[in-house]
Image (tube, rainbow, N blue to C red; front, side):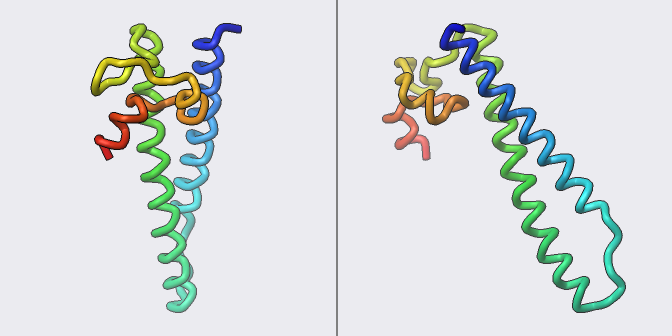
Length: 108
């Protein structure tokens, strides 16, 4: 299997994991609330955590979808900032990254 096919498979697997997690979070948030005030407070705190996880997951989904688009368009592995190559080592760790190491530091 070529390196790009491996990267695509990795990205699709992660996208599937996030999709499953996102649906589980939505399901938990849709559950009815307790009528007990103390339990309701604890449930609300839990919902805030779930909402935060859902937001982070949605952001990662967008990054993965953008990486898959770059794969289709032939731009994968090219830094969106400087146009230089993104190292294989960096792509091994962060397969959805659009930036080389130097530009990522400047972009954050």
